[in-house]
Image (cartoon, rainbow, N blue to C red):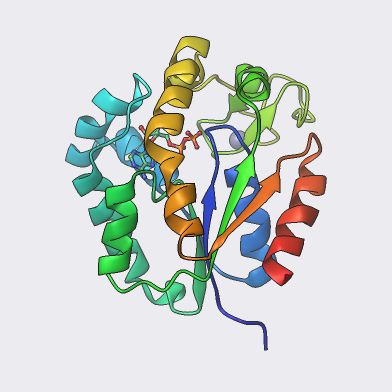
Length: 213
Ligand code: ADP
Ligand code: ZN
C-alpha cells in the first residue's frame, strides 16, 4: 500500500508546478487541484466569482484569500480527495496556509520547485494554451506536434497574464506573498526543495525522489 500523499507544490508562476502536479496525479492516482485552473474556468463560464476574480488575475494580482479559501474548502470536501491530493497554486499566502491548518487538513509533504526569475520570464514568454481543451505547450520546450495549433486542432493562444509585464508583477507577488510559505512549512519540518531542471522529466525524477525520501 502506498502512503497517503497530501502534497503542496510551491514555486513561482511558470516553475512547472502544473505539469509536475499532473504527472504525480497519475502516478499516485490522486487528484491535482489547481486554484488557477478553477478560477480560469469560472472566468470562462462567466460566473459571479469569475467576474470578480478577473479584475485581479488580469493584472497579475492575487484573488482575495476569502475567495480561494472557499474554493479549496469545497474542493477538498469532495470524496476523491479522501486518499490524498496535490495542491497546485494553493496556498499562496500565509493566511491561506493558516486557513488550511484550521480546516484540519494534514499536509504530508511540501515541495518547492525553484527556478530563477530570468528562466521564468523566458518560459512564460513561450507558453501557449488551447482555449478549447486546456492543453499547454511551450514553443521551445514542449511544442505542439501541429505547430501553432493544439493537438486537438484549435489555434493556440497566449494567456493574458503571460504578457511579460504581467509576468514580472506576478513574480514580485510571488516573492512578497508566497515565498514566506517556505519558512512557514520548513518550521513544521515539511519543506523539501527541488531545483527545477530544464527537462521536465528530470524535474519529475527529483520530485519523485523527494516524495519517496
Ligand atoms: P501560475 O501560472 O501563476 O501558477 P495559476 O494558473 O496558478 O498561475 O493562477 C493564475 C491566477 O489565478 C493567479 O495569478 C492569481 O491571480 C489567481 N490565483 C490562483 N491561485 C490563487 C491563490 N491561491 N490565491 C490567490 N490567487 C490565486
Ligand atoms: Zn486543444
